[in-house]
Image (cartoon, rainbow, N blue to C red):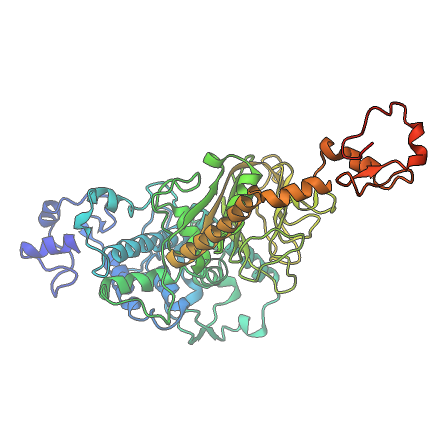
Length: 550
């Protein structure tokens, strides 16, 4: 838009004007646009770039109140392109390849769609933190440092894990569709439903259905719209909220987000260091936030192996008592895979499983997978230490999710040896947590921990409530310890005299009590004495036993 306005300032009509959409070359040179700029094609501003922007803005008004699919379709159609060099697919009249009557023909680059959503999420976070409803930024000492926290990652393929997950899903679904017997109307070109509009459209012939991995040349990253919608609803249900949240922050900066809808809230680490997130704009945070609305907002680090060490006692003490939802995330040593579990239930020590259906397992590197409860089993979370049963209960000792009490599906042993991450159980959906083995590419089950962190998640209120609950429990434990340390002197003396507390000072009473040849001495201050007829058996009658009168 800035380039177009520059052209207009020297008397040239632009794409948004009424004149020629291709300004003279002299004016283009004066704008200092490089030859490889995506807005240019052969020295003129490419019409499709503005068409894509126009499509984005037209769809924006259509996506906020019609559910998730229209918003996802707007993101998708804004990235429709074809060709290995990134040339926009168009016909001779410079019209793009999004044929509204044939939704199955739409293809877009998976990485571009997801990176667009990633950048919109960061822009929404910036607009939210700088809105009129927030405190003034004039009090900040480092405005540049504040703004840099919202700069997208410059790594190539920043959303590679999400992109791989989408492409793997598309490949698997297309293989299933190719192996399935098509319905009778599929060969006749009868009507089907457009996944974007819901309207009836002509179904393409079977021979015209091309795989996303063979859409054009080496376009291995191209994916179909319908498959993108399916994947997003299953794996990244919060992805669609990126667009509507961004538009709300732009158009209504002073108005709170409607309570009837769920915004996309980027996770906020508040400057806490992490072994997993290299910055507050880490794409890994975006991937996690797409899986559940409970992972947005403020996070609080409860445990990290970097500074706390691989100590189960430290991990145990950090978890117990915290009353909010938690995210456990692990990086394994062999393949560098990153995976973990989310639970909304407070941790407690128990030999039985507990929790609720909000719990789920996930993998976020090298691919993204979310494995939610099936609705059958109830083995959600498990926390059992050796100290509870002294190791004689025959159960697994450590932290686990799914599986059985003898071997959970995801299990971190108390010794941190022999940790398990299997791909199936009766509670959660099947799917790999670990990357394939380097040799042979087979599935793996056991792993060694490289990094381990536990975060309190859910936003400011959930984190504050969880920390308050942990503080209250620790206060109770400290009070019990202090109470046990205090000594009641009178009670202690009574226990001392009664022999409840062992002492040699009153050992003679213990030895004499109950003997048939001793009798009570009521005259000499109590105690015991030998009867008169048996005193002659005393070896040294001149010596007496203290307290017995003997």
